[in-house]
Length: 108
Image (cartoon, rainbow, N blue to C red):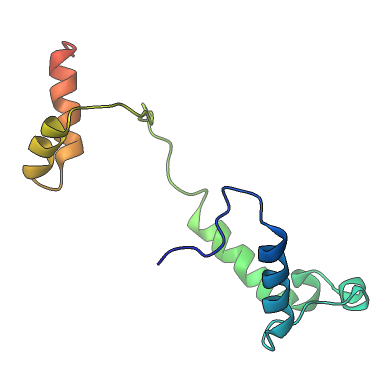
């Protein structure tokens, strides 16, 4: 599926007009009026029991993924197509095998 309105460039006036028309025509998601926005309240104020339950669950699960001792660094490199194809042809774990080949070449 291709995006009709790419976010990599500014929208043209026609695109902006079409988007605004689509927003206005959507009965399931009407745009909030200034009065409605002024009356809005925080989730925890409207649903205190549910907010407390969510907070307890987040606390129970802990801080998330444990820190890695030596995290990997994302880089971009250019390799010849034949090299990439050779590693990919060996299966799903091609990135690990490529890393191991680089470690060996670097003497690690």
